[in-house]
Image (cartoon, rainbow, N blue to C red; front, top):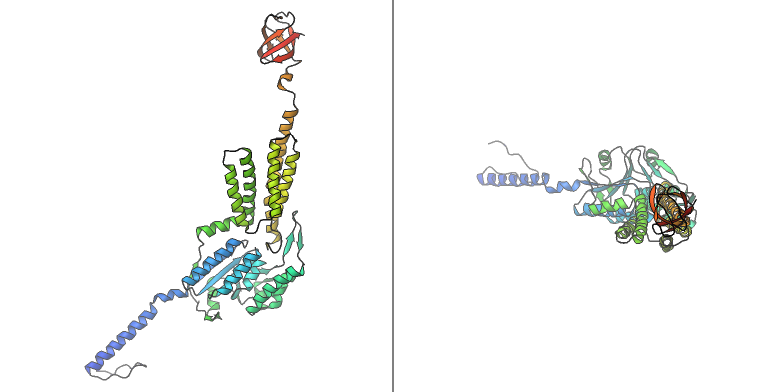
Length: 449
């Protein structure tokens, strides 16, 4: 027989049959072990979970990230790619998201994507808190200074040192913890610095610039983060799909939708309380509850008092004779209270100016429309109240006698094309013109014209 192949970790076999049998068993066991490694179910552990954070960062964004992290940990994903395309959002939600990213043992790759996407204000903070930061070409980050917006839509940068220093400390510490450019992180807040992808990489703000997720996974392959060496080259990417409850929360957390829910709820309550039995008040309570949940912040008691006062004044107008005074006061209260509900500054919200203006419009514009409706209704009511009584509209009008009329003889007259029963204190012959002097029920009292 020919020479036996030598295995490095096994002794050279002898040529007797027992040795050959033993040798064959060892080869078989080694082959089984080799095949089990190749086809083991654990190969799915190299999968990467993609989580998308688009639009305004709201409480729903925080819950979606938390659910995605739980799924990634339970299914042993290699890493999480947090795709960012956001103008900013709630600061408290951002802090909570940063905490979730720090606590999870799974590496989180922040990625501003697709090309031309933005991750401003709170989005920049989340990128700075990612274990690995990356951007697509032509993407932009920065503009992280808190801004106060007034009820009229004007803006004022917040320069209070207590507020600014708190935000600066947060973003610079996240940059320092991940060995990124601390100076640039500070400039994002203090001077609203903006950087494109190439500049961000050149200045050490992000580690990678990549046009696609697959290319990014190839670039980060071999990077050691959180005591894990990433093995992501060619890894399958699963997209996280939030459950229905979180998808619904994301929908109502949109600032514009949450604001509209609040206004719909307020006016549904007004209609329901003024016309009981239609169920509008129940719908109003539900809409208000959804709006408050969507807004995700504590209700300002003063604003709530103004809105309730405004509702009371509008209801009082419907049952009073103030000729619109109560309605105007009620609408003023509702508009003021609605405006106070708009989260315009730190720390309640951390929104860009355009979103804050949109929210103000969503609150105030329906109130103005409703005000115009109430003004028209009050005008009609006042016109009706100031008009002459219906019976007085007959006095002084001319008619034509159709029958002989007298103190004891009733007959018909033709008045405005209709036949009316009439009486007179004097004798009137048919065909004579008469003038109405009084109306009693359906009977006209006339005299000769």
